Length: 102
Image 1 (tube, rainbow, N blue to C red):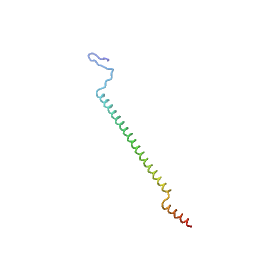
Image 2: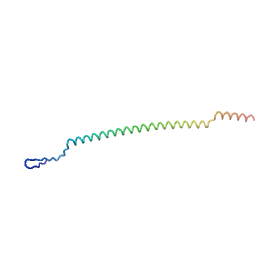
Image 3: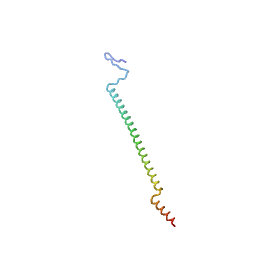
Image 4: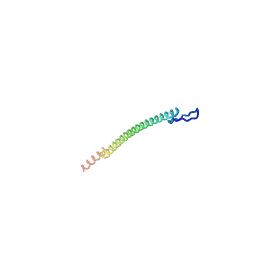
């Protein structure tokens, strides 16, 4: 500490920095607000990632079901188009019988 003064007046200068109580309270409040904001942001980030993963899995399952249904439908359509029908069988049977009679 340094002492400066003349006569009976003495002024004291301190080399250490002094923060008033209001600055300390403001700094503490600011740090608490930053911490709360970071916690809320982190929680939101985690929730959004979980929600995205759930929607992605749901969409993948839906697409898989759609592809399986389309494949099954296409397989049935191809099988039916190449399989002889009853009308076709009866026509061939009649045609063969008529050819044999001649």
